[in-house]
Length: 308
Ligand code: TUI
Image (cartoon, rainbow, N blue to C red; front, side):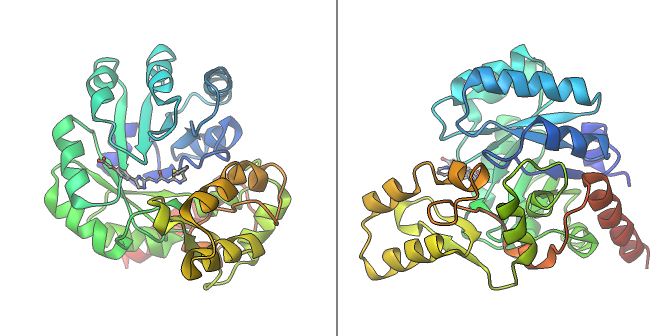
């Protein structure tokens, strides 16, 4: 399947694996890239020495294009912005902020730059700043989200920009890919379906939650802190949601309870204190498979639909 994204990133399939903090490391990223997509190592708020190791490990496991996601609210963002240059990483995606101040240095280093954006206004700013493409991420996505659904956001971003648009949020099979192309996207980014991949190094409890989730099993918490996040309904996330709703948790108390909760979910599978971030499409993800199968099945189905 050839699109402007396969051309830009020199890959077989126009699919990026989302840069999920604490989750997306070299084993997952290299598996996605070796399967013909584009794997992404998440910077999150991890130490720079660890990320340097992860980038080098990824290079040792694939000779295909891979990327690094920089979470711009992280205290290590400046250091990671330099590390990707030093390590000659082919692609950078960014999230949770405006990467404008870094873009010219990345472009000079020959790095492809694809910011993740939640609105048309921010997308336009990224195009003006020199981005090669954008990921238009709808609020069906897992993790930190905006306010607009994928169905509404993608065509509006496509109309507003000249650079290619990658759709994200709610895409976990070939129907989601075909629909994204109908909306004008030239590629997709997916996270949730890769949580249920063999190569994803999360606690088995996390994978089981994703595979067993049904349509109504995701919840958005933290709107009142300014950082709304979507994750799987658990006793912990339901407690946060009700504390936010009825005012029994102040925003400060909420922030304290969620500090470190990603690690507790990913490493420990801790159902009492962990935040199991995932997208609203988890109900469609029913089994754990290798990344190569996930990608081949998705694009096999998409091509059939698009050719029909
Ligand atoms: O970034 C994500 N998803 C994430 S980041 C994350 S870790 C986290 N930890 C603590 C607080 C918040 C997050 C978990 N999931 N997706 C991409 C994304 N980017 N969603 C929204 C945005 C975004 C928001 C504002 C992008 C740009 C932006 O610009 C603001 C500006 O000032 O221009």
